[in-house]
View: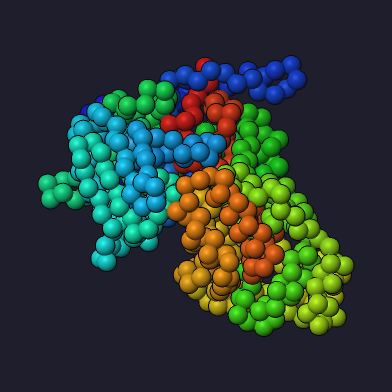
Length: 522
């Protein structure tokens, strides 16, 4: 175990006592629903987490699971913050502005922000933090998203980024969870393994794959946030153990509820289910280079041969939304609500088969539950619904072990999941643009790629909306991704907790900012 005890830190026993002292149940209205009490200061928030590994690291360039991402937001601040409504708001940057071509971005930094060590944030800290992820030798997972930065300079408390080309979403980019602002050390670089930060909580103890604990940063500059005295992250991989920990009061919140047994939690007294529809989606990508998927009518036939609502009801137990064969979630700023929704329609599927010169189709789909929870069952349901359209869909069961290296992007028709991205550009650029490493359908569409490049540097929001609307249309009706459902983030918590009316959908756990946005009830 790695320990980072500091004066004023609390022991596990002290923190548990603190929770008992302030953790009172919410009042119940005559009609049986909880009446939200006012937030109060105090207590220890104990979070049971489904993820976390002994191979995790303090290095922000390696963060990739919910344990490390939550740790990042509990201990650190970023230049910008994605608010609960999906908008971008200032954090360590008070303001920002772009040049006319969106290739130069000027950020004005907040004054007198204190790190846990007492060091006051400077522009050099910001430059060192971003530079850590740049360059040919960088091992950071964020290297591709900061690669377009060609120069960073400081002028007092102003930092100026020069990009190789315009990017209207650049302020969103610097909110990425890999890019916390850490203190620069003597050589002008950050120590990626530092435990210091300027976020709401100070890291006290950490054992990756097991737990982490924090106490409130008394010098935190946000006076209306960070109500808890302390935070505990506890890794509980087993679904039943995690849910039992919540029911028995060992934890106050679990970040993932098992959809097969969530109905038991729904009936448990004092427990509330948290379901947030976000950008997480499950898909069935088709290799658009391979027969028969190189024929768009075949792709469309399959899109109309799947019963999306049945999958949401059965695989997601109702905790989700039907998808429309593009990766943009309904809560995103440029979501195209005007686009015709693809629904189960065997006659229309048959029409597209005939357009492809076929009366029937025999095709295989390669699945494992590693692709997404319930993927094999989803395949069976898909096969049953497709049969009515004359499509004989054979579900090939693949091993979970090695699925992502041996099946995904290797077999022509398989399963996948995406947590999504906060902006349309990031999502499309990651998985749909020509040549992208994770373009899992190997799709290349000239008009789509043209729109993607143009929209990226367009600052007029109305024009951007038009372009992203058209891109969703092209993707849904000409692309190789069959996206039948968006899976909600489903967790649960004791009703002693007060949560905001609006919960962020960009990541689990209220945008991974539960530690500073939630509180116990009065």
